[in-house]
Image (cartoon, rainbow, N blue to C red; front, side, top):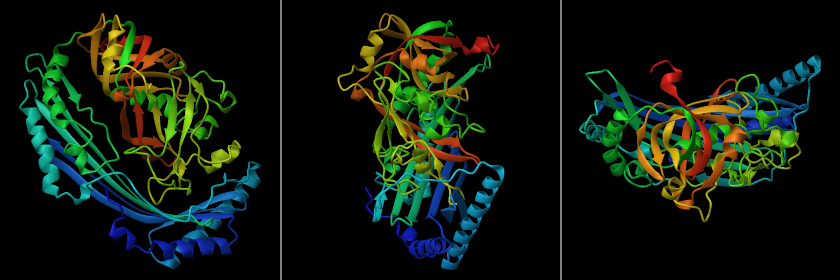
Amino acid sequence: MPSTIDDSFLALPCRPLADAALARARSLGADHADFRLERVRSANWLLRDARLAGSQDRTDTGYAVRVVHGGAWGFASGVDLTPDGAARAASRAVEMARLSARAGAAAGTAAPVELAPEPSHGERTWVSAYEVNPFDVPEADRVGLLADRSARLLGGRGVTHVTARLWAVQENKFYADTAGTVTTQQRVRVLPELTATSVDAATGRFDSMNTLAPPAGRGWEYLTGTGWDWDGELGRLPELLAEKMAAPSVEPGAYDLVIDPSNLFLTIHESVGHATELDRALGYEAAFAGTSFATVDRLGTLRYGSPAMNVTGDRTAEHGLATIGWDDEGVAAQSWDLVRDGVLVGYQTDRRTAALQGLGRSTGCAFADAPSHAPIQRMANVSLRPDPEGPATADLIGRVERGIWVEGRGSWSIDMQRYNFQFTAQRFWRIENGRLAGQLRDVAYQGSTPEFWGAMEAVGGPDTYVLGGTFMCGKGQPGQVAAVSHGCPSALFRGITVLNTARESGRS
């Protein structure tokens, strides 16, 4: 694992810019100021049928100054990497705070900004857990690996087309604030995916199937063997796709479901992760991304799910996409309970929302996806904990007489309060008398959040736990995206409503 920050980032004038910005903010009377210099490099490659169809590699560098002045927020960003430029940005941030304070007072809506306390952490450095930076790998090797794996799938029975994608990100951040915290961090993450498509030339019927490898806070080693069995998955995929093409359509009804982590992570993301963001619960996302049924008056009493449900928010998980050393407000990474024994016991917070609720300290969930954006409250790695003595997936399946085993991420839909939802998947398997009995097609499961999680009878043991996730969680106005992981074991749910998507859409 690399133990140092890239020399090219360290060569940037981070400290002189921060000193100039913070000194100017202090001189103008700011109660709090923080400075953030970022360099974000993002690259992606797309191959169709083993041939490169497109690629992009871009780097964004800039800085931001945020202040609390006169009880109001102020923010400004810039790309002039000189002390004078940083000082001017601080002046603009203070002026923005003054304008905001006057506007709030005129409208009668002024509420002084207060931040939950956070101790000074001094000067610290943090690098995420990876072995080989993907940007150190030659372009020919990156494209060549994707082409080889695409060709392997194209040689499989019934595979007509293959799409391969790889997305890699290196994120560097320097942060300093008037409390004395100074952090320098480097995060690397990768998202590899291959999709095989089969087309029946006689009928025109087609279907596809993706690899299940989740995005991860890892490096190039993730694509060459560490952390995922690529050979095994690619070897099975053509046969699984052929079976899916021939599978019968599901009969709607109530089924027991055994859900694999490759699918359940997304249900966690939408129905638990977003619902336990405190800004949503307080109504601050109502204009765009919705609110939450898990309101603050129900903290400690809301029956979120069955006693088997234990969910944590975690900014420290190894290889987590939302794992950090310190957030964009200088708050140290930590882990905490959101749901304990099925009851709502916590929220994800930043310093502003934590102070609003008198929670004492932020859980470190402030993040900005670019130097031109102000930090907003974003999701931690929100994960369902396994049962330390829990069963294997096969044992969960063995408990089911009539049900469905669900694998892989599909489509999703959920209401603005994170209450009613519907999910599909990549693969569905019929369960009969405790055994798998072939694949099904056109399956979607639906429910309401507390009813669904209340129907969870059992979770698997640690050997069934997988850290899934997404690169593209959207939130905020203007919109920002963030990468986040969700770990979970396999889990058994009783009596879940299943729909036939072909019939619902009129295709049958």
